Image 1 (cartoon, rainbow, N blue to C red):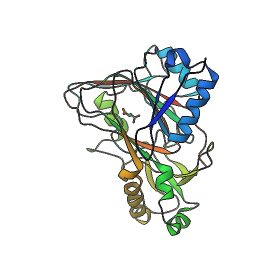
Image 2 (cartoon, rainbow, N blue to C red):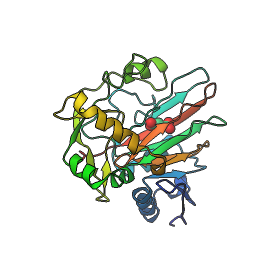
Image 3 (cartoon, protein in one colour):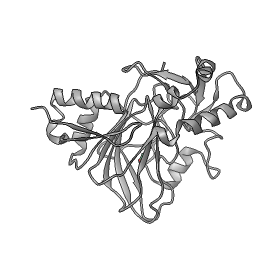
Image 4 (spheres, protein in one colour):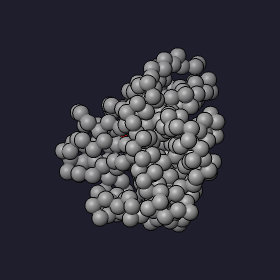
Length: 285
Ligand code: SIN
């Protein structure tokens, strides 16, 4: 039987909680899945609370959206290689995902969506912020839209530009232990993507930018740095965002084709643990 879903937007810009769904019970129901899928397209990021699902059930739910995407250098859990465990312990200072980004933008086919299921959360803090890149695009002036049409960006997972504290992203992950690392799968050091991408399902245009973005293709750093800096700041205006407060059993699913996100690092001395699955995407156009 189809779940009786109540959709409660959590902000004006994007994000909705879906109530009335028990994923363990409902995920095989096609009508329920169609409503969940539509809610993702309509709200860009959706949230479920109080879910009790096994890793197999989380994988089963993710597979309804597509094949699982394997990270090129972060290892999955020993028994579930398709699920990455993200952990910040009481003694860690760094947390995973603490910059504005869209997942695996450094890959030729970045992840279409990401599913994060909270297993342990701090009493306060550790929220995640999301920003709506359709709105970021729509709010640009016609002149800016015309200037940026056709521009390609160069994205990289690891580069001098996204170093922090003298360490590359991969080095930070390895040193901090928030995720397990594996021998990197061969992948290009840099990839090109359209700066303005079209969502393959909604047909809407969005600004495709994030911490992996290095420069405009065919330009020098100093020629495009200023515009990229402006677009980064513009993209995360508070009017384009929502903020999610996690509880144990919360599950978020965001659409990387139209959303950037940022994991807030404001809970030092406390634990936060979550199971993360990414779903394979297509070549952005
Ligand atoms: C991520 O960037 O995928 C992690 C987000 C989070 O932990 O809230």
